[in-house]
Image (tube, rainbow, N blue to C red; front, side):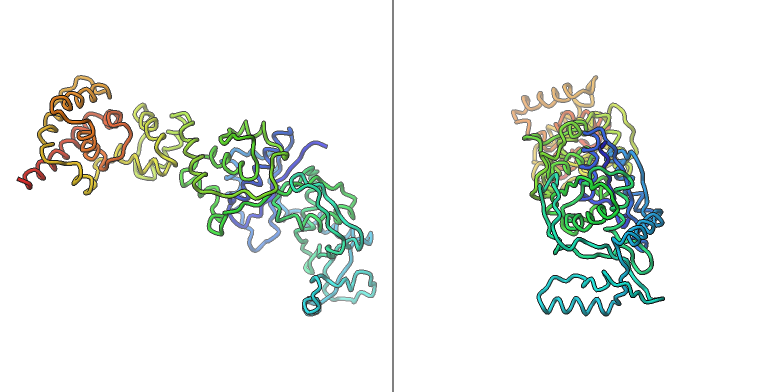
Amino acid sequence: MPVRVRFAPSPTGYLHMGGARTALFNYLFARNQGGTFVLRIEDTDLERSKPEYTEVIHEALDWLGMTVDEGPYFQSQRTAIYQAKALELLEAGNAYKCFCTPEELEADRERALKEGLKQMYSRVWRDRRDHPEGLPFVVRIKAPLEGAITIDDMVQGPVTVGAEELDDFVILRSDGSPTYNFVVVIDDATMNISHVIRGKDHLNNTFRQIPVYTALGFDVPIFGHLPLIDGLSKRKGSMSVQHYRDLGYLQEAVINYISRLGWSHGDQEIFTMDELIEFFGFDHVGRSSGRFDDDKFLWVNAEWMKRLDDRDLATRWLPFLAKAGFEVSVDERLLGIVAVMKERAKTLVEMTEAAHYFFSDEVTLDEGAVKKWFKPGLEVIFEDIVADLSALQSWTPEHVQAVYDAHCAKHEVGLGKLAQPTRVSVTGNTVSPGLFETLYLLGRETTLARLKAGLAIMKERAAGDA
């Protein structure tokens, strides 16, 4: 059977990182095996399901580069299929009508709780034929009463559950609407899904679903239950893929990072999508949970920022610069700024904040840095530096450095005593890429204007000390 896998989110919220990891493992397996990646929207919860969530889920998959081969299919459009299959089960004697009232079911639960028994439906209507006329009922599957069910899970290995653990769960509610554990079987079977890859939290559902496959004469797919992700708190777990995108994470980094939450390939840490597709297999998906680590995620993103081509990164940076109020285009100057800034930033948002002085008309000087670095006597040296920089015929990092080297020698001072006051004057603080690259990228006019403003402060401080 050709490999066909599905990602089946509910459109009741954004695609969070745990869901993205499930989608990715399905996608990688499909691509590795030359198979088909199907998107199914499980929207049977009509009150909570919203079309806009379907759109953002699709948007997230597209941004991450997970191209959908088929779909999206919507469960809400397949109700007639589910009801027909329920009728088929009723007619074959593999399901039955249950007329228990909510009060009777609650009494059964309380009785089981008092007696220390498993809280399961009593199956009181399983073999009865005295159906009352006109009363509401649900339809329940007939689960096996003896024996055991074993699955050879691709991740968890062989797992067995005895029949005594299974219940006759509801497949159709009293209003005729189908339940989750019923519809997913119908969908997976009729869509010819060969491998069901989902979180380990669905493992119990699998054993409830297998009797439905059997009763309807469907082939049971191969299952793979992925380890859960530790460290996804309620806050983190609610962070969508788009949230990380808006924080300035690259799609390559998101894919790279979530791929390593439960899967490994030797000691390699950084993977392209093509490498993930080539190397992915369930023989290297572990049973133990992966841990979501913010610091590691940032490191992966920083590595990808360094690896991206400058022009590619600059293009992706433009929306962040625009949001900050900087209208720029991808030109040689921006490419130069990207080249020096990407080695120092971990996200595009961080790079925007750190590079503000390249794009702002004015900078605000940090008071502590001014007090520390604008020492008395510097104003004399900086008068000469400004004059010599103004006279430069060619504004290059090398020519700018030559001016500073000459004044270090002339005044017998180390470069640091001139470099830091210069940084403070032109950037507002003491942190920047290489000084001469920074001055070159700022340009002659901006550099001289900011140095003159810094010089004025030096003179004011010198006058105050006199």
